[in-house]
Amino acid sequence: MTDSSITIVSRMTRRASCIVLSLLMCGCTQVKQVQNLDTLLVLKDYADEKEAQEKWVTEAVEKFKELIAAVEEHTVNNFKDKESIRQRFGQPVLQEDVFENNVLVQRWLYRHPIHKLADDRVYLYFDSKDQFIKAEHIVPTLDDQK
View 1 (tube, rainbow, N blue to C red):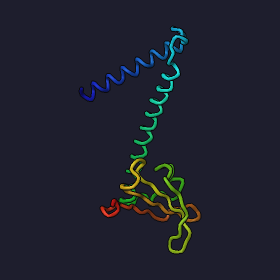
View 2: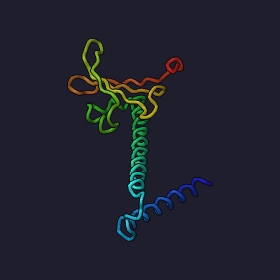
View 3: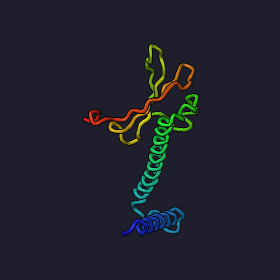
View 4: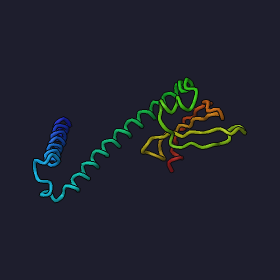
């Protein structure tokens, strides 16, 4: 099957399941005759949740790629504070206080939402007034993956 035929079959399956569930919920059929309605509804909720998760991951990956590009092109310096960075690139994976040149700063970690160990990491640093200080893009080496 080609990708387009798989997509068509997938859409038809979703429409058919929606129609069946709609008929069941509207009372066109007696709901008590369907023994597995609870299971079907759980499966439908699971499918809906899975789609939402996939959408979230896709968006997070895109934002992370954009952040890497902004760090490499030094355009991340256009973002002056935590809030502007959070709005543009989303929540960091980790926020921690660290000492940088004997000064306490906050460091944010961004990474790929799925691949945790072997992928790039971006660290953003902020002063005590929540102003952006600097960014680091860490690219793993072969030694890091051992």
